Image 1 (cartoon, rainbow, N blue to C red):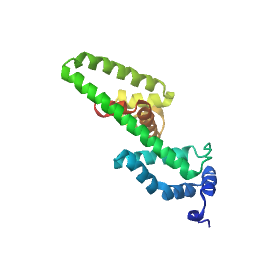
Image 2: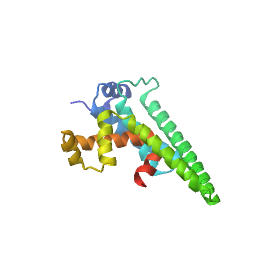
Image 3: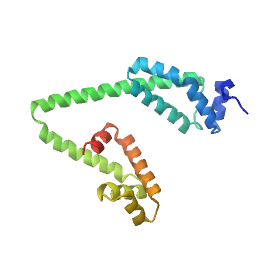
Length: 191
């Protein structure tokens, strides 16, 4: 039986590329705390740190086969977490700037027309992303969100299982969340 904690970075990467989940878990266990500390120094928010760590390791697993790490695994991970942290800081600053300008605009009292324009633009953007979905996902999404049907009703209508419908809805929401970013939160949680 292989002892993963005794494996070198190179050996772990080889195993990871072969799809060895235990090698992935060893990499995660070996670097998680160090990466959290590194990210926390830059970000300063525990939840954001957890998010960037999760994104990094999710991407590591998803792209394990195509990864070509030449600088060593630890260098790759620390560089990746630094870049993700800086991207998050930049994104937060942009959001803060947007919120400040929005607050200023609202305080001026001229926001109703702009709100209608933004609502129309949001609706068009959302519709564009929905239209770009695969046919079956789009159909399931529309039946659920626009027609208000339950997962059971959709499954019966389409001749599939509730589990399949549920998974498709989850996948659609993941896709929309990824494509729309912060607009997803505003749109789907403050209707």
